[in-house]
Image (cartoon, rainbow, N blue to C red; front, side, top):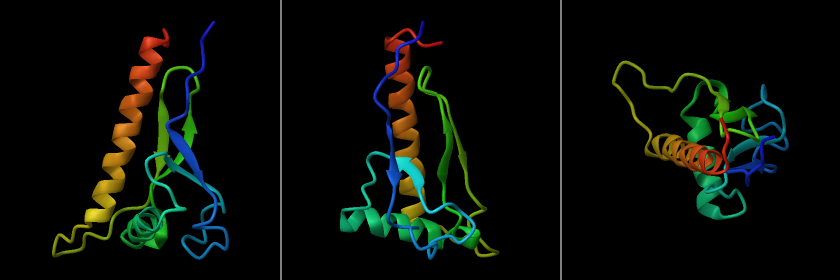
Length: 114
């Protein structure tokens, strides 16, 4: 029998509540717990990340295991263009997802998850 561990993911309830951020995504999204939409810097990070992705389709959690830390994410292509544009906000958001995933994997391993 597997144990559950604290989730490294949090719901993003307000940023897309009116579908202005991304009209093709649900109103509730999920992201890493280290990005808090209730803080100005967290909301800014979410908005800048969405602005850098086609159609505003930023990285959002599609599925997560409560037992082994595995997760599936979806996102549209970044707007890199011919000039090789970059987005520090997008790169930070991806880094935060990776850090949360690492934590989930460590927690799962320490609890005996497969």
